[in-house]
Image (cartoon, one colour):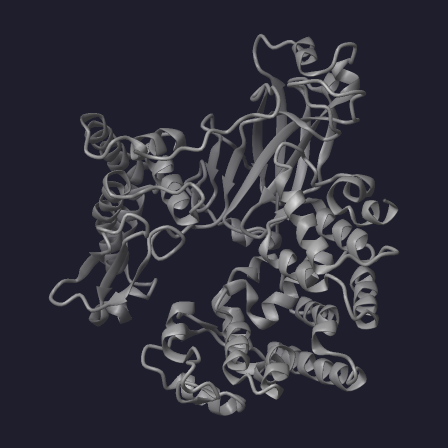
Length: 267
Length: 326
């Protein structure tokens, strides 16, 4: 796979959107993938390393085709309710290339993959809504932040691959992700967004991703679906228990002491 | 005047009761590598007894055998002081052992071990899939309560999975960790005028200074296959690190929640063989007082030695010279 050797600062200096000209990132037409890449490749100091194999190209095309099918099948559902589906698509396909955690912090690789192939998808997921509301700067900014990755771990394909790594199980496969995807599509509320943020941003070191899986199950697959605030508070509570080794705690400990969604309901 | 955080323990703990030691094996090889007494093993480019160089990434898995032993003169009954009256340590407590990698956020299975079964012959095997981990592995153990206590007592941990004791961790490095251009010292191309290198931001007490190299050198310095580049970086590193040490001690207003400050402290702790606490204490001492200046000189001397020994400078330079002769 190819990778950019330039870091996030380089792209911020050269292409981050400005308020005075929000519809393009500096001089770039940001709705046209080929044009964007053509312009980025002309940037002074841009540095690319590696080669892309035929297998990699084929997997990327498969991902794009799977996303297109998803958009058509669920055209009546808001894109943010389809994050779990996107996580399955990215993870399932990239695993065929034997990608794993070793690749996760190779941000140059993810940035190249994202910027060269996923402009349309990033715009659909993160920017179209604001664009339709004529909030052009906000729309451009969120597209830039996710496509290029102002914060490395939020680069579009990486974000979803990481969610997949956290919730995929060697024994049960994608069943947890599929249940979450189904619930997310059905519900109009729920803390799926904050769950995904925490799966990416917090360390949550635990055997077989026990913490990620248990918290996702308890918070979002129970009788009551936790709100965004309840999910955020649950992760704060987990991080606050420094003097306890909760990374392999039972589901009951998570229900009673960390997640608290059900306690609230009972009272 | 500096601000300090005083950490108040919520209850009594006895740390460092069980000593961890470990041996490392790779499948299909007949050598074992013992984690040395300083609890830190660098497997990257490790030189084996037959003078061959080990490249961990040529293997798919790594086996770590962890051995446990109670520290000398310790008695299991002493743990009763950390339990409510009438509770038996061997029934209430367990030892939990795990290996993790912070970089990739991977964690091994957690082995739960009865305290009564910990002897010098206790050996626990962990198979580490190398595709899941990067840079550094950490082996750590905890003595935990396994059930909630009845009633609440002051200074005594009463919750299930409360940690009563932690071991001193073992660290096993498997990849090259790039200090220059990597996590610790920020370096990049810039306008340096007639100079090859420049360090800017040395007056800023909050943000790490940045090393710039001349734009004209960029095409060479970004390559990793030039012996001359490697040797110039190796030799420049003495000055860069010493200058960063000076900045840390005499200029920096340290914030222990700042990951860049912490990384720098970690770096000097490694090379100067000083604890992080010692370094932070020195940084927080009155600026330019006699004790601080003396402390800097001592650390600077240790840095000069530590950098060479831990990075195997002699061997690296020898290889560079040899490659030029070819």
